[in-house]
Length: 311
Image 1 (cartoon, rainbow, N blue to C red):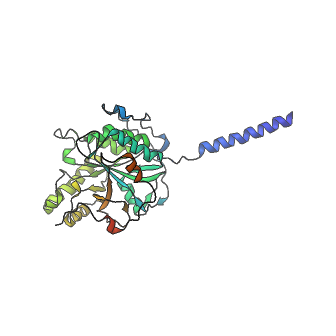
Image 2: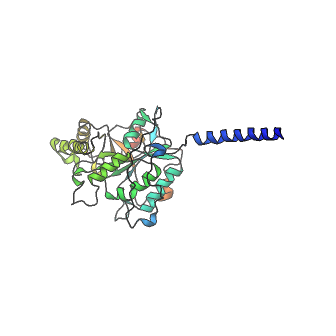
Image 3: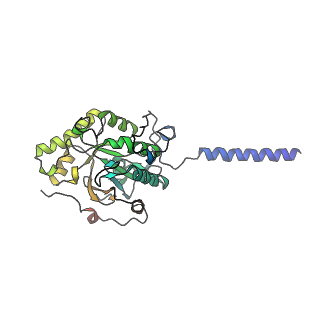
C-alpha cells in the first residue's frame, strides 16, 4: 500500500513539473507592444459591424518586452493600403477583406511591423519579431484607419506605418483624415508615423524651396506634435525624381517608399523601396498567393519599374 502511494506521489510530481514547464515556455506569437501584459481589445472584430464605427481600444501604458538578438531578413513584403471601407475606386479595401487578410497573416505566423523596423531588418540591424515579419503601410492617414484598421491590428498585436499629410490633419476641410489627437494615440500604441508631405503635391514640379517646405516642413511639424523622430517618407502618388530623392535625404529621413511593385530587398536604394499595392480588386486567393513559398528571386533590375518622373 505504501509503495502504491509513493508511486502515486512520484507520478503527481512529474506531472506538476511538466505543467509548469509548459506554462513557462514562450509562445511564438506576434504580441502587442508590451508583450502578454498589453491588453488591446480582445473582442473579435466582425465585418457585419462595418456600418457603424468600431470601438477603438484604449491605449494602455505597458512595459516593452526585452528585445531579441539583432537579426536580418533577406526580403520583406511591404503592403500598401489606403482607405479601409467601401468606396468608389481601387484605393478602398472593404472591412471584410481587410479582416480576412490580417487574420490570414496572424493564423499563418506573420507579424505586422513598421517600415522603420522592416528597413532595420533588411540592413541587418533589426530585431526579428516572434512571427514572420511583414510591413504594413497606410497612405494618407484616413480616419478609416482608426475606425476599422486599428482595432483589427491591435487585436493581433500588429504594428504599421501611417503616412500623414500634415495640412489635412485636424483640418475641418478634410474630415475624413485623422486628427492630431488620434495620431498621438497611434504613436503611443507603437504605430510608426511617417510623412506624406504637407499638402500632397506633385513633388517633381516644385522648386528646391518648395521641396524643402513640403518634405522637411512636414517632418518638423510631425516631430513637434509627436515629440519623437520621424524616419520614414512616402512620395505622393509615387512621383519623384533625383532632385526629390536628394531633398528627402537632406531632410534627415532614413527611408522612403514608392508605388513600384516588388519585394523589398537589401539592395534597394533606401529612398526607392518598392511595395505591394492592396486594392479592392485583390481576391483572398491572390492575397494568399503573395505569401506562398517559394518567393521569386529578386534582382535590382526587377524593382526599377514604377511611377518615377524624370527631371
